[in-house]
Image (cartoon, rainbow, N blue to C red):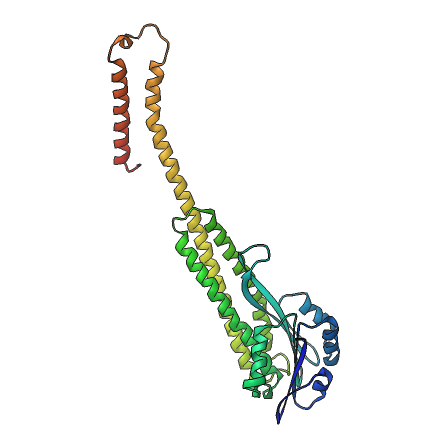
Length: 322
């Protein structure tokens, strides 16, 4: 798949192999560019007056934004999904850039790969509802942005499930795997946040109707997308707080476990201390120690040491130190 075109006329949707012919045709034109070569992208850009720097923005994976030009509006957004990393089996947030160019009677979507959010609207125009293009390129652009944002909700739901699993795991956990899971979630949320925050600002420009190419009757649709992005941003901030709380619980659990270990070692050392004192006394090489000549001296000392240890253990248990 490289360059495809739909042209909506009163007779329905027609396809053109030549982008220039599609632009010149009477009606609303949508050019879909994906998996295209640099030469094909430059050809489409030349036909529709798209600047080379706008192409670079799509190719270079810059942050989402909206720019207004005299003859078109350029909106750049990103799709985001969870995928296994290139060097690890851990899931990471993978994003793909799509550039949406809105003209007076034309729409160009440009992406480096074929994207589901764009393809869903394309298929709807092709088979299900060709009237989407009849409402203008700005409304078609809204449908694409709406699909992109709806996919964000699926991504956030996956992260929410992972957070719930970590919250159940973190209580009493002391293994390093739990900490790795928490740090992985923090990285995922940070990556999602980097996509959502600028996307919200980009859609806000369209929702405010800052350009005449966005019809006033369609501004409410972009405001709906903006409201969804605000909701997503708030969810991400809430989830970041939850993950931070889970990390604090984990660190507290580690600290409490360490305190228990130190308390046990302290009790053991305290019990051994008087026994060591007794052994030390009778280990001295004095020639005159009357009790050493007693036949039961060894048994008496051992019994006394056991008694001391037993008394101390009972005391520690009474104080709830054991």
